[in-house]
Image 1 (spheres, each protein chain N blue to C red):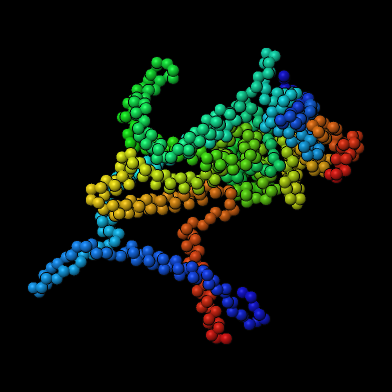
Image 2: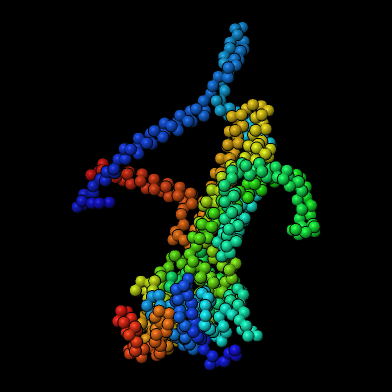
Length: 337
Length: 258
C-alpha cells in the first residue's frame, strides 16, 4: 500500500459504472426468467366445492412449464432407457469416429499420394453431405445391398453371408452413419494436432532409433493430444446431441422416448423439457471430464497447470476473506486515528 | 568389409546431396577416426549440418559412399548389388549413433528422467529399473541429477541441452553427432554445455561436431574441416588450420567469426 510519510492514506478504488449497469440489467433479466419459469397460469378449468352450504368455485391454476409432469416423467423407465441408448450411441459413434479419424489423419499426412488423396476424398464426401441425409442413407442401405458377403474380392470364394436388413437395425445404422460422419471431422482435428507437433521431436525420436510407429505412438500422438483433446470434447458433446437425429429413423433414444410418450399424452413441452434437462446434465458432466483431461495432457507444456474449479473456489473465498479483513482493519485504523 | 580397430568410424567418399536441384554437398571426402573429435566449421548453408544428418541417415545422400563403422549407411552390399536397408535395420544403425540438435528437441511431454530412459526401454529393451539407474548416472554426469522430475519447459536452454546429451548417451552410442549444440543458447549458458562435451571428448568418445565455437574447436578437436559451398575447402590439425589458413575463403570466414 502506498504510504505518505508515516500517515497511511486510504486507497479509493476506481468505480466501474458501466459494469454496475450491466450487472443490474443482467440481474433483472435473470429475475424475469426465473419468474416465468415458476409462474402459474389458469388451465381454463374450474374447481368447485361446497363450503357451509354455499357452492364456491375457483379457476384451477398450474405451472406454466408443467413442472409436475416434468417431474413425473423425469425418471420413468422409458426415459431412462432412452438416456442409456443415447449414451451408448454417443460412445460407439465417437469410438468409430476417433479411431477412423486418426487413421484418416495419418493417411492424409502420408508420403503416398494415393493414401492422402483417399483420405482427402473421404473427408470431402462426409463433410459435404448433411449428417441427416447420411443417417437416412444407412437406414435404407439394404435397398442397395440386400445382403453382405465376406470373401475374396472378385472371386466366388465367400466366408460369410449376412442379410443386410437384419444387420442394419436402426441403432446400427445410426452408429455407422454418425461414426463415419464424425470420422471426417475427427480426422481434421487429429491432423491439426499431428501438424502442431514440432518436426524436431520426430527427428529426435528417429535419432535414438525409434521406428516410425514408435515415434508416432510414443512421441507425436501424446503431444498432439494437447491440441486434439479440447475440440474432441466439443465433438463428444455435439455428438451427444446429434444422436437425437436417430429418433427420425425410429431409434428410441432419449428424444425418441420423449416423443413416444408425448404422442400418447400430448404433453409435448413437458417431455421436451425432460429430454433437455437430461441432455444438459450429461453435457455438464462431460464438460467437467474434459477439463480434467485437458489438464492431464497439458503436462510439460505449462509451467503451472490451471487450477481445478475447487482450487479456484478456495482461492476466491480466501481472497474475499482477506478483503473483508483488510477493510475492517482499515475502518478500525480510521476510527482510532 | 571387415572391421578392424584401424577402420575409421566415419568415412565419406565423394558424398553428394541435393534438395530439389540445389546441390548442398558436392562430393565430400572426410574421415573420422575412432576416439577422435572432428569439428566441422563453415558459413551457414555450406552443408555442414546436411553432412551430419546424412551420417545417421536422417537425410539420404544421393551419390558417393558413406561408411559408419565400416558399414555403408542405409545400404548393404551383396553379390555386387546395393540393397537398400529396411526401416528396422536403419533404426538399429541409428540407435548406435547419438545426435544432439541445435534446438535440443527434448520430448516436451516427458520428464527429464523419462527423456533419458525412453530410448533405453523402448528401443534397446532394457528394463525400466535398469534404465532409470543408468539415466540417473548420466544426469549426474551432466550435473542435472536434481532435475529428473522436471519437464523440459522448466529448464534453461543449457540445462535442456545437457539433458539432450544424456539422452543420446543413454543409448551407449559408438559415435556422437553434435549439430551446432550451442547456437541456440544465451552466451552465459554456452560454457556449461561445452564443458560436458569436453568431458565426453576426454572419455574417448568419437565425436563429430558442427560448431561456430572456434575456441572449442581449437582446444578439443583432433581434426578440423572447413566446408564451403558443399565441398571440404580445408582440413587438418585445428591449431595449424586456424592459425595459418591457406585458402582465401577460410581466411575471410575466420575474419568474420573470430
